[in-house]
Image (cartoon, rainbow, N blue to C red):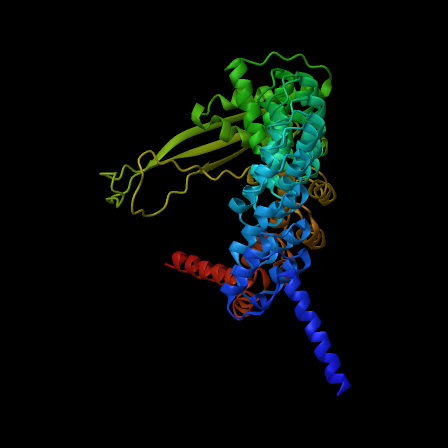
Length: 568
């Protein structure tokens, strides 16, 4: 009984307190309209309004309570978290604390909604924070437009989460060292490219061109440099060959170009350097000593560009230069008998012969080259067919050539001669106008007639040392020791040498090992062609890595077709 009286007394006191605060039965009403009206007309303390704004189930009631809140942190929380858009909007309208407004703009996924608070922010540092951290890209970009201080712009350029914003910031900056830092550290390639294009100081550009690691950045840096001393440094030291090539295109220092033309490890760089040489002495050396066909073409054509059909003006400095000069004059004289449109292509084979007999290991047995001559005749194969090509009314036939090389040596009697002719197809369905087929010239066949007289020891040295490809392949064809040939086929670093060696192998087990282990498709295919019919058939019936089964089937089918073609 006493307990019941006590509870009644407490309940009465609570009612009196609610009545005194204006919070009476209206806030306990089940009708949200009554609760909303009570909030709008009543006077409540902040704790009551907070309770209603956070807990009431009706958004209209929560909105009414929110419009009377003053706690900025609470308003920010409601603006972020409430389920109802009108309630969030009401909270946002009451928010005046700039850091909290900036935080709202950063977190808001809608750039349109985020931008509405910009008019209540005046601190540029806060706009910088928005530009750096905003969830929405457009919010970040619009905040960037509000920032004018260089220090803040630099921070945005370095740290904004949006690459496009970092890029957009760069146009408002001029600090060259900052651009270099961005090129070195930014994770996005588009930002790095935008930054490198804004650097003009060659002192900053040169190390980027040499060793940045990204070729597009290195090439862009190189293209921005005009001073020769920096270009020379890049041309000789850049990490990537395509960058060195770009620097060579812009380089004019002849001594450096000569060094690059003879020493660079990549043919595209040497070719670029050769095309800019003016020294006839150096061009002659490149024409005789160059091992890459394209670089040789560049040197040969450059000489004819400078001197035409005349002899180059060369003063030999030593016996080696004298031999090179004499060899070139022999080559040049012989090349005059080749039509101009075929001269560069076919003179490459003459260069292979000339350079072969400059090799001391060979010249000690054969003596120097004393004569080199060529004959060239055009050929034409007509076909009695009508083409299926719409723009050709009548089959005009195919043009070709017959090419002969003759040479003599000081210590060898007689003249060595060989001819090669275009292998025209037996039949054609259509022939495009002006079609020309080159003869397949293999100077190794001609040189082999000379090298076969050398000792096996000397041939081994020629095949395994750092000689030209022509000398090495010719020597391999003359070797008889299968152990040496097997070692070259399995272990040589040059794909062309492994291919040449495979074609001279006899041991089927070694050939199978090459097929199964070589990483070069060309070498594996060549090895398949050397397998016996039985071993090749076995390879066609099993699945292997590198697509060997399909390659074996292709080789087998070709072998069958060739046998049928030779059958009477």
